[in-house]
Each structure stands twice: as structure tokens, then as C-alpha cells.
Image (tube, rainbow, N blue to C red; front, side, top):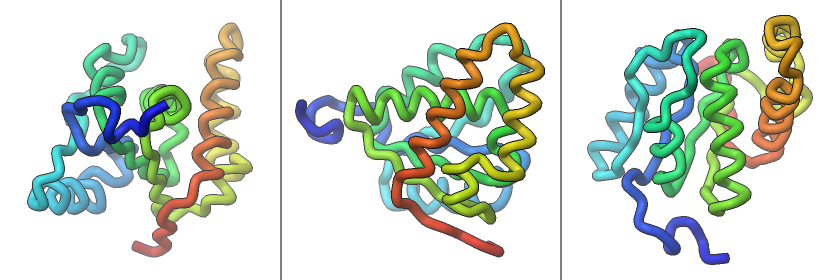
Length: 159
């Protein structure tokens, strides 16, 4: 299989996955501006996704149409089902389309992502209660978290 960056024409160079309340106004806005200033086409979702609605087709399409996905893991990343859906789709694209995934561990440790230690353990416990009738979804999210925790990335503490 050809490499994702050379095998298809991508609409975006980079897809940013992040928990807005933690990082939007600081790290993500600086990263986005820096990438854009360098001519790197970057998708940053600024729309507010409503709870209970399906993840938008445009969002999934933007992930698929990106060469790279930068996933910014912050303390409340796993509390968002939208972030978890994005991550699961990103990991799927990594496997199927050979998309390059770059994790950024923003004031959390890669080990905590991989092992789903606190604060992520609490979030997953809440999802298990909320989605008790769809545990397959929660297991898919957990699996994506484990996979992402195995990828070498950037560890930013006290940023």
C-alpha cells in the first residue's frame, strides 16, 4: 500500500483533534496559526458539536482527507465523546490509509493515555455508565486510546 501522503491528493495537510475547553485559546490557536503561516493547510473544527447528534460527515471526511492528524491529549480529552469519535476514526485512517498520527501529550503523560490512568480512567468510567447499552463503542474508544498511547509524540508538561 502506498504512503498516505503520496498515494492521494489531500484537502488538508493536518487535522487537529483537541478538547476545546482545555486548549483552544492557548496551545491550539498558536499551533494552528504557526502551521497556517507556514502554508500548511490545517483543519481546526471551530463548530460546536451538539450532544446527542451524530458526528458530522464533514468532520469524518476532513480526517480522511488529511495527510497528518495531530491529536492533542489534554486532561479532559477523553471526557468528550466527540474527541473519542475523532480519535477512533483517526486510528482507523492510520491503519487503512497509512495516515501519519502525531500525538501531543499536553500536561498529561503518554503512559496515562496508554494505560488510561486518571484523569482518563474517570472519563471512561462515565462513558461506560452513559453508554452501557453500547459497550462496543466504549471499547472502540478505549482501543483507539491504547493505540494512540503507543505512538511516539511530543510530551509537553507545564506548558
